[in-house]
Image (cartoon, rainbow over all chains, first blue to last red; front, side):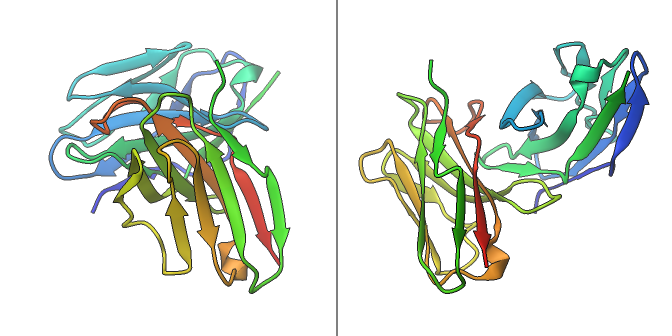
Length: 112
Length: 115
């Protein structure tokens, strides 16, 4: 079956540091890939997505590239802010399916 | 416009009791999903509705769990004979269209605690 593995947290950074959260997946066919974010006290929000190989999703300064050869979808941001402190979830949706399969989440704490 | 809403936001019950969790999807969204998120883990799929029918219920853990969506809008997740292991945040999501490929929008969740 489908699965998603992402690096465990917490990740603690200083403001303006570079952030990378690794995500790899196992799936048959060509899944769609997502990053969701959960800010403190809020619900899950879609951050970005990519639906085919080599696509790059981007939003709010975050980027992730769909790499089929390495089955990865790593999340990056060049300069984080305190407001980026949240839990980040990598997820996939199978090519013929509808349900999302999530990784375990990575908590990010950005200190001023 | 209004997002996905879930009630109650918190529910405390005793082992063996019956609970109902409600989800109001975004108006006009035909697809509705239920997920369960245990502490420190990612959400896990439970069931997917397209309109009034359950198109995929493969994630329901056992027959104590049941969900309905009688009019194709509001959905209720029902848990019978609750167990302590059912304690989790129950998330609802909705999406427009019928392909199942559209973006899912999540509600704030219901935090269930079984004592």
